[in-house]
Length: 324
Image 1 (cartoon, rainbow, N blue to C red):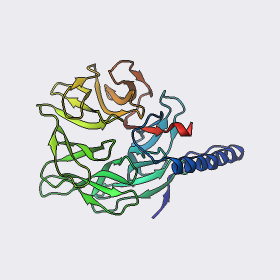
Image 2: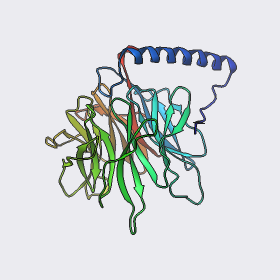
Image 3: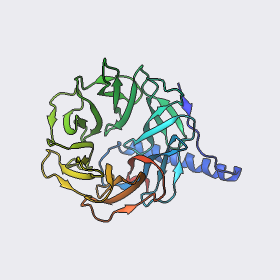
């Protein structure tokens, strides 16, 4: 099944023709680049756009903007709920969680979809009786890891799966009574960092074996994300105090844990820039959610959205030097 995500109209026929010509040229260039060099998640390239989702009148839609906050664009515009965008390694696609509008809510309708950012064409990757969320691409773009919410006798059970980008070859990686969520693929493709019961863990990306706990404390650590060189993991940590969530980094083995934000409000959901120099994250002050960016040492914080709204799920588009 293939569907088209509604993209906001350009306004005039002339503009539409220009956009169409530009899209064809961009597609030809992208195909040439893809033929010359395979897609990678970590490279010495440039930072592309930042994707995020925003609530508008109770409806979640996906937006993108330049890494300085300008040139904001709305990618989805439909009656469904579109959340948790994740760019493919070549920056041409976005995996996301899509759920049709329902009143009342119907279980098992939240699925993982993939959208072409140039055409708006979107296709479901998962179709099951359970809800799925939190997609993330493998570094070579061949697979997507995601979370499936299984209905239990007393509580829901969150487990991590992988699937080929075309929807085939689904594999279950975790199977336990704990809640496993927020998978993050290592740049070399061998490991997945993930959240389990308030801590950050590692496991083999192929079969879920060799699970290793990286953090161990009395607070909640979640939303891991790898630096492009694979040396560090950024994550958010929430203490028991009110409004005490901060962005931290640590070495890939769990050592060297460092608080980067340590400021008023909640700072969470970090996303490393493709060139490894900056981190995008969310800041919540009094219920207002804005997308910020900062250097990897916590300095140079800047508000990129700066408008009242509920936003979430930032992700940074890889943009190889060859496309400049």
